[in-house]
Length: 69
Image (cartoon, rainbow, N blue to C red):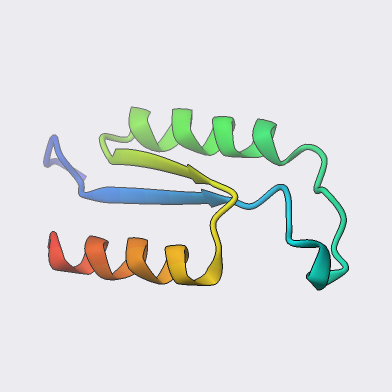
């Protein structure tokens, strides 16, 4: 943990879902995402927050993140 930059930390905060999933909105998730963002940024990570992502969008984020390594 001696390096100033530690890498990337990706937060996917899915609060709302497509009606076809039958899932309801998740309350409290914004507060959790904000806390994660703050603590990992403090640890020196480059943090990015992505709200309400579809499966395809999540896969693209993960693949893009792997390409950046």
